[in-house]
Image (cartoon, rainbow over all chains, first blue to last red; front, side, top):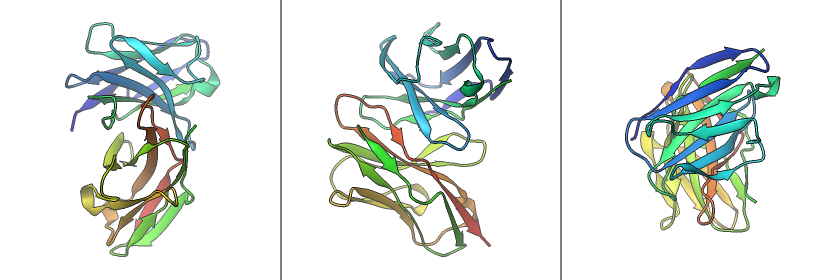
Amino acid sequence: EPEVTQTPSHQVTQMGQEVILRCVPISNHLYFYWYRQILGQKVEFLVSFYNNEISEKSEIFDDQFSVERPDGSNFTLKIRSTKLEDSAMYFCAISGGRYNEQFFGPGTRLTVL
Amino acid sequence: AQSVTQLDSQVPVFEEAPVELRCNYSSSVSVYLFWYVQYPNQGLQLLLKYLSGSTLVKGINGFEAEFNKSQTSFHLRKPSVHISDTAEYFCAVSRTSGTYKYIFGTGTRLKVLA
């Protein structure tokens, strides 16, 4: 099973600050995803990324969010100006193909104060 | 649009007893179905998946699930649970074409009692 690491494991930030969450797939994969889980709620899709561009995004993924692969290995999610409601667990996932199962990282817990 | 319902938020069960975690989905198109498990402070681990073929799917750790198209269900079962099965279990669906994001249910917390 492919391994995915995420850093940091826990991020605490002040409202209005920018945060960058990182995902590092150990092996090469084609498709990358970000999901989030607000405490006590379901896991929600944010965005998918293929061939260095966004292939799909949800309504949650507004202009405050962006994704990129800055060096061909890391996959980052940036929140430009965090809000209290951005507090959640953020999961990165990868898959080798469009219809393949997704493999998830351990998540980053973001706390916005 | 697709949706997933996991009716039971928590399921307590004694060790070595059988368990069934329920998952129902709604979709106007064909879907793939998945069960993931989340142990404390860990990510989501794939338990099993249904893509096509046999409706009875066997996964890791002795779990299995049966796809029932007429009832739009994909219930997860294990004949004898262990303490180590205590975790959160998520059912998810994705379309078979057009988009491949997962739609998750709200999760079921399985608590195995000694």
